[in-house]
Every structure is written in C-alpha cells, then in structure tokens.
View 1 (cartoon, helix red, strand yellow):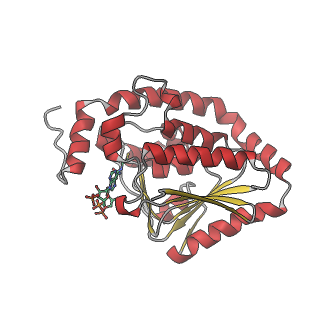
View 2: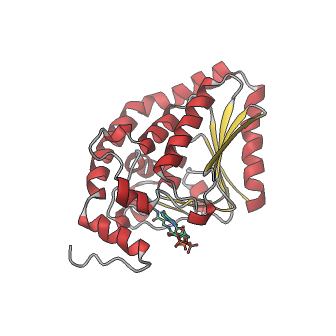
Length: 258
Ligand code: COA
C-alpha cells in the first residue's frame, strides 16, 4: 500500500498523503517519499507547480506517534539529516510554487508545513492545531518564529502554548490560509490555482519566489536549527513519553509528577 501517491499532470506534480486508516499520520518512509517527490518536481522542467493533498476529512494527524517513540528523528545524527528534516527543507527550498489543499484536520507538522507553502486552501471541515507542548515537545520548523509573526504573540500563545485548535476561517484571518472552500471543492480549486502556473514564465516565478523568501531565509534556518536541537532532546523526555503513552493507551496524560 503506497501511503504517498505521486503523479504529474498538466504541469502539476501532486503529492497525496494516503494513509487514512491511521488518519494520515506521517512515518519516516512517508517523509522520505515526499522529500524525493519534491526534489523530482524541482528537477523536472515540465513541472510548474506542486500540489499537496490529503484524504477527505483528514489532511494529516501529524507525525506518527509510534514512530516518535521508536525512531526519535535526529537521534545520534545531525537533526537536519533526518527524513522529516529533508522533507521540510525540500519544501523550504522548493523554487516552484507549492499549493496545498487542506482536506481536513491538519495537526502538528500538518499545520507547520503550511507555513512554508505558497498557497493554502482549507476545507470548511478542517481544524488546524499545533499541540506540541501538550505532547511534551516544542514548536518546530520555524513555527516559533512564523506563527507569532503572522498572528501576534498573544494569539500565537493560544495556538503554540495551549495547543488550541483553530477554524479554517481563523486560519484565513491570520494569514496561514488563502481561502476556505466547501470540502468537495478544496482539491479541484487548489489544482486550478497550481495549473495557472502553466501559463506563467517559470523563470520569473522562480526568481520572485526566491526574493519573497530571501529576507527571512537565514533567520528561518537558524530558528529551525535551534528548535530541532530542543525537539530532539524533548522526544526523549519523560514528559513526552507520558504524552505518547497516553495517546496510544487512549487516556489523558498525567503531568502532575513533573
Ligand atoms: N500517530 C500514530 N497513530 C495515529 C495518529 C498519529 N499521529 N493519529 C491517529 N492515529 C491512529 C490511531 O492510533 C488509530 O489507530 P488504531 O485504529 O490502530 O487504534 C487510528 O489512527 C484512528 O485514530 P483515532 O484517534 O481512533 O481517530 P479519531 O477520529 O477519533 O481522531 C485524531 C482523529 C486525528 C483527532 C486523533 O487520532 C489524534 O488526535 N491524533 C494524534 C494527533 C497528534 O497529536 N499528532 C502529533 C502532533 S505533533
């Protein structure tokens, strides 16, 4: 069963997250496949834009929690060399427009990745959340920098410290998403936006995207390195073990002893 499905059609390289039985939770193998799909899209001159989609009702439930417990990305190696980091850095460095159809819930890295895409369309059934702290972890991939920038420190505290979910309308209001669409229309709409790049000059698109990102690039990368070191350490923390264990045993975590 292929959990990441890729295709190229009408100048658009699509990456579909397809592991509905686990709510599209992302494993090391899936990050690896998505990283490879992004580099292939970058190298293929026929590809003018990338489209990322999930499944009806679920975009992704974030990193696979069993994988978090087993593999601990970054452990024993450079944190930026793990499959998840290779995927996120490929997304950051993708010089073609990336359009996302958030087909349902986007949790953890499911929301974080949106911060690095160019166009984000959200289903009216979607909920976004970054529940890192509740899992004993810290924000990742520059979300500690970009979320406060987008929505201000106070609202960012609700999302990043309390892990409060937010509605598609709030995602648009704070600038994470472009528009909310009825669930059945979110993928076709996102695809139409991606296909518009077939009629645009690719060199100018590439240079414009690079210019838009250049002013913050170094700060984003430095933040990712700082967050990555803490995140890797937190994955081994007793707080995180309690949170992961609680999720898998379907009970509430108990942090009273920490
Ligand atoms: N990692 C591993 N497995 C996951 C998962 C994840 N992130 N999200 C869901 N699953 C699994 C569940 O364990 C369950 O597996 P099982 O059927 O073998 O028991 C299956 O997917 C269905 O999930 P379930 O929780 O029963 O579905 P739901 O509709 O009640 O809830 C979610 C859906 C997405 C709200 C809920 O699964 C959830 O909160 N997931 C974890 C999100 C999270 O904290 N992600 C990490 C962010 S850093």
